[in-house]
Amino acid sequence: MASSRPADAETVRAEVQRWLAEHWDPSLERRHWRGLVVDAGWAYPSWPADWYGRGLDRDGSAVVAAEFARVGAPFGALDVVPGAGQIELQIGANVLIAHGNDRLKAELLRPILMGDLRACLLYSEPGAGSDLASIQTRAERDGDEWVVNGQKVWTTAAQHADFGLLIARTDWDQPKHQGISYFILPMHQPGVEVRPLRQMTGESQFNEVFLTDARMPGHHLVGERNDGWRVLRTALGFERLVMGSTGTRSRDDRRLPVGGSIDLFDLAARVGRDRDPLVRQALVELYILRTVIGWNARRAAAIAQRGGFSPAASLGKLAMSRLLHESAGLADRLLGMAGTLYGEQVPDAHSANHALMMAFMNSIGGGSDQIQRNIIAERILGLPKDISVDHDRPFREVPKAAALRPLGAPAASSVS
Ligand SMILES: Cc1cc2nc3c(=O)[nH]c(=O)nc-3n(C[C@H](O)[C@H](O)[C@H](O)COP(=O)(O)OP(=O)(O)OC[C@H]3O[C@@H](n4cnc5c(N)ncnc54)[C@H](O)[C@@H]3O)c2cc1C
Image 1 (cartoon, protein in one colour):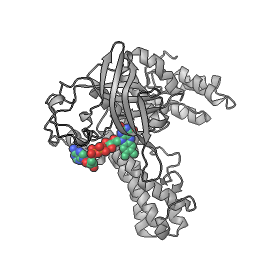
Image 2 (image 1 turned 135 degrees about the vertical axis):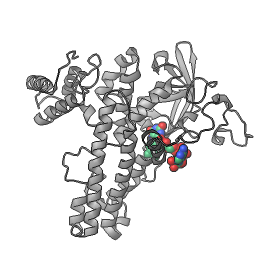
Image 3 (image 1 turned 30 degrees about the vertical axis):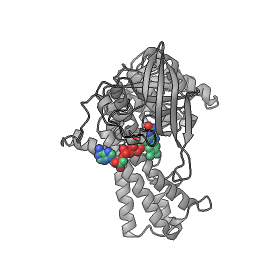
Image 4 (image 1 turned 90 degrees about the vertical axis):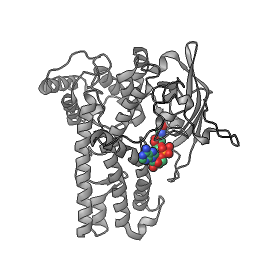
């Protein structure tokens, strides 16, 4: 693992060039190469030198990314390319770097960086989505372990995950934000039951997860007991940053992609609408929006690399949501009647309609558009806080979501 900290961009460039000249060989097996990059601290150069990084700032990391790209070597400076790799894994790794104990970091970071582990986010519950601090899944200490009971929902990729980033209530007598802890839950155990949900696209990417006496080792607590909300804010900040920047670093800036396979400029030309002034105006507006989102993402990422998460990440996520909806909507309009079709036989229409439906992932997952607007209103514009009637009451006394009562049971003022 690297321990030096190069002083400036040119020193970094010289060092990474020297290292690449010594180690890069296109005929190397991918996994072997990935191991070399991870152990040398080039995969996440902004991380501390003790934990697979080099303690570089954002400019230094960008130099690393550029040098790897110049010789065509993969896995360099993944941290300046938000969205590369699997979001849940990146969140897990960054949460561990910011808040994890050394034992957890030693156990999990390298396998995560090597792509050997898959993760999911066990946050939302039937009675707690936007108001996430209302979670009722509980974790109780039992000897050297934690025991978890409750239900999560909308858990993306839970059916494939090796571990879940879990929030659970550990103190019912504290106000709702203060009695929550953040954990790493091993998913492959009898107490974890994953049931896939069907989405409007026909796919099943997300799930219900039922936790019944699921167990975790004591050191799987991330951060302090009852301080999980602080850890969660780091995780959500990172998630919003990634969701607000995906695709803004396209290799070809002249493209306006929709769903991976359509380029709007190309589609407009193919359907003979590229001279239509209204279409051209819509294309340019989307192009400008994408460019500004890219700048915002870089600003938010720079702030994140200095150790804080900025509400700029919410701005980016909200703007990305608009970009995804409007791009897919324009693709559909360009396709005209064909845009009403769905299926593999009509690739353009299928891709446009799939992208249109998937755009809702960005406007709901990771905190809905309305919640991002609340954050922007409060933390950027300085407007009064959203109304809250229960933030200072012991959670035990707060009326709970009716959906969690057994069917037919009378309403109770306290469920705990
Ligand atoms: C594709 C997808 C993937 C997801 N993946 C995961 C995952 O992996 N893990 C996970 O834990 N969760 C996941 N979620 C859940 C997601 O985080 C929640 O759906 C989201 O936070 C909204 O919560 P809710 O569904 O309970 O809606 P609610 O909170 O009930 O909101 C309903 C509506 O009311 C609005 N609203 C609520 N409160 C306010 C307010 N204070 N001010 C203004 N408007 C408000 C909301 O914006 C929304 O329009 C995913 C969701 C989607 C769609």
